[in-house]
Image 1 (cartoon, rainbow, N blue to C red):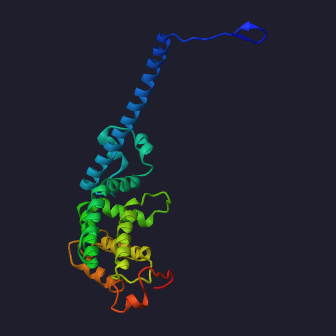
Image 2 (image 1 turned 90 degrees about the vertical axis):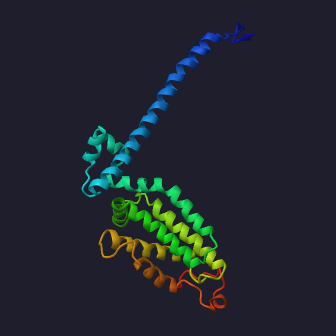
Image 3 (image 1 turned 90 degrees about the horizontal axis):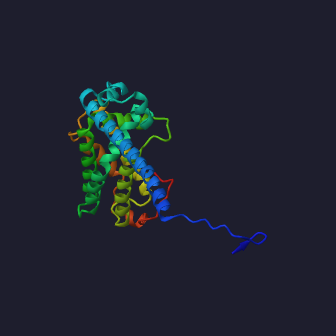
Length: 245
C-alpha cells in the first residue's frame, strides 16, 4: 500500500500480548473505582445508623456532629462531605423507611373499605411511624416547616400527599368525595391537618398520637370533603373549579 508520494504505508500492529497488557492495566482502575464507591456507601450508612442511634439516645437537639464522628472514628470534614448540615440526615433516614410505608399505603388504597376508613387508616399508619421514631419525626417536621433551603429533601411529605391524592381522586370518580375542588388541593389540606397534629403531639406535647384527637380533627375536616346526597348532580366527578373553596 502506498501513501503520500509513493512511500509504503506504515501499518502499526499491536501484538496480542500488548493488548492483554493494556486490558490488565485498565482493570485495576475499575477495581479501585468500585472499592472507592463501596467505601463511600459504607461510610454514609455508618453515619446514618450511628446518627439514628444517638438521636434515639440523646435526642436530635442534644446530639452534635462531633458525637457522631467520634463514635465511628471519622473526621468532621468527612461528615460534611456527605451531609452539609446535621439536619440533612433526617430526610434520608425517612427515605429509607418509605418503601415499606409505601407498600402499606398501597394496600390501604387497594382495600374495599369505605374511603373515610381508608383515610383514617393512612393517617393511623403514618402516625404510628412518627411515634415509633419520635425524635427524628419531630426534627423532620420542624425542619420541613422552618427550612429556607429549596433543596431540602421533602420526599416523605410529597409521597404522603401523593398517596392521599390518589385516594381522593378515586373517591371523586365514584362520587364519594366532592368534585368541585381538585384532589391535589384536598390532599394538601389533609397533609396540613396531619402535620399540625403531629407537631402538637411531638413538639408542643398537648396531646398524644395514640389518642382520639387525630380522628376528631380528621372527621371535622372530612365533613367538608365528603359528597352530600345532591353533590353528584351539582358537581359531577372531574368537574373541578380550582378557585372554589
